[in-house]
Image 1 (cartoon, one colour):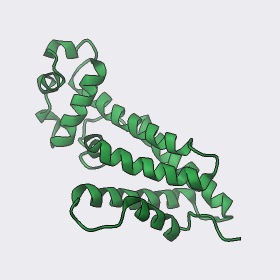
Image 2 (cartoon, rainbow, N blue to C red):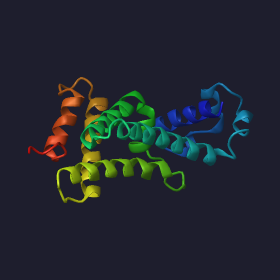
Image 3 (cartoon, one colour):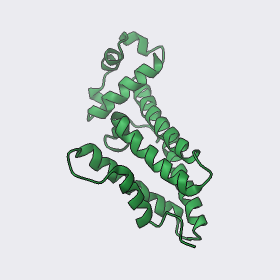
Length: 185
């Protein structure tokens, strides 16, 4: 039931502009439980919403980690992490909106998982750069990479009828443009 409530809250956060418009009653109704059931799992309205945001970040972080763990080759792991990023965004549009498009101010600290997700990308970029003997700042390159992938996702999700290359082709072009592919020997 707890996970159902988190999913319901995340879905409502993704479609509302203020926390005031997301009541405990609305979350309970969406999850198919009574409003009093919410209090068995959460202290109050803000606790529920904050944990729903944390839930979304943890799911995104886990998708990123699965990509990183998919290979010992940093180039393959980087590619797979990019694929997982795009897949997460397209398959969990509501959760992705909670993270990057519809950030309600609920007065809580940023989820630990948010920093961990970005750290995964930075560590992958650092490994790729080291493999290429490239001395650029991995944080700077990770920010460029995140911005580029977020743009791919935004175009695909927001303009599905727009003619565009396959997302994997766009991801490959990102790697080439940012020099995140193996250098020729």
